[in-house]
Image (cartoon, rainbow, N blue to C red; front, top):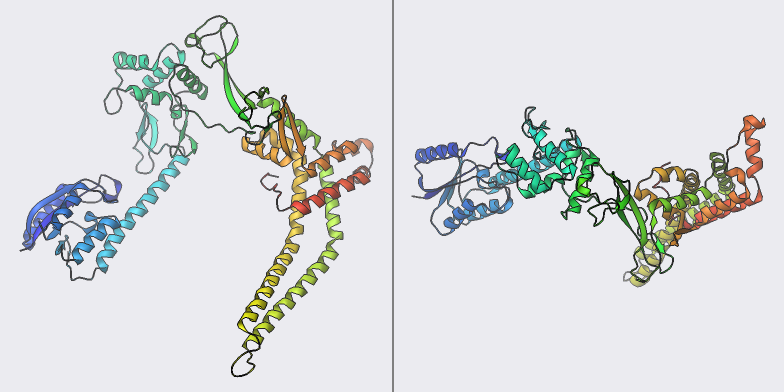
Length: 580
């Protein structure tokens, strides 16, 4: 008589929500064994997911089967044995090798002589179920995060509201702990209490416990005071850099959160730092030593007692009136960003620091030197299009000639093939293999070159006009973009406007790229390009005024330079990232 192990498994995770309980499985399988007169020598029971290898009870059962301690397995369904391809393949292999002689489920039996296709399909379906479930769960969690609800356990002071059902859970205030946790933040904001003292008060005076009815640990209190969730924001997934504004009720304001981070830093405790994007690092060079320009941020405090401004770094009191920072009530905290030489090339570099506001003001001055009116932008683009149209006839002639040359090349390739397949006599052909391969290679290269040239001739003109429009739109709107742009957009503007970006003696030096250098020359000689026309006051036709002002030799000369430069550099010049 065969000897059997009973194996029962139920995961605590969502994939086994509809599966019988362990007790029900065991009862059903014992009844099944009695009904079929199967000899059961031992039972293995575990609560663990089968989506990956590494189940202690399952591994022990397989080990003992390999030791010939049993001949078969009784389980509720095959997916109780495995939901991953490694364990499933192991079961199939042992059955094929007749080490497992029989697997009995509640509805059928599996034997070594059976076709294993059905078993492979069942294990494959179990594995695919897990894969689909994982993807669906991640998609659901991401959607929930984007809707403003943290898709994980709410921090202390809040509760996961399950009253709205599956997939609709929200985060609500914990009626028992919300106000107490808020008091903990208020104590911290006074600057008079350390986190250790606050947790002592919370335990001894308020009796606050976490949702598991345990005291709050010291590590938890620091996590609490560095968690942006309390002022309404959270990162999901953690470490991804994707921040979402929550729909839950904030416990504090963003400024209060920043104040607590400052207090924690002054006490030597770590704080959660936000990644800062500096606009001009990596593109500026020191004019004295040639080293890189780096940036750093600094905080300054205005003492509420004497109004003295001082740096918060390594200070614990006001240097003027000696008021301790912890005793200050709602001090004003100022934030600055400074740029300076790294001094890695020459440690004795004498260049000092400059604020980001000063750099942006100087760059804005460069932008004002190329700032043009809407009238001039439209006139310049119209002029360049007229020049392109005058050359269109000659371009069509070039394209027509290229098409003819390409057609001749294709004919030559066809003739070459005919020569190869036409026999000279019964023993050979008009061309040897070496000669055929050589001529075919040369003609194929010529065909590729002609096709690329033809396609380029047809596409280049449209590409040139696109860049021309972008250049003048940049000159027209760059100052507006710069005042509202992100750090990354400001950095791109720096690199678009010019090269050799040098900072020396707090002065920013930029070598304008040729299109903008030409625009600057036009503005120096034609002031009307910087100011808008007012035809109502002059009583003259606006189009005539524009034509009279802009139709000058220097304007057309500089515009032709812009056009020539774009034609030569269009592959390397990209302005498409800026919005119109």
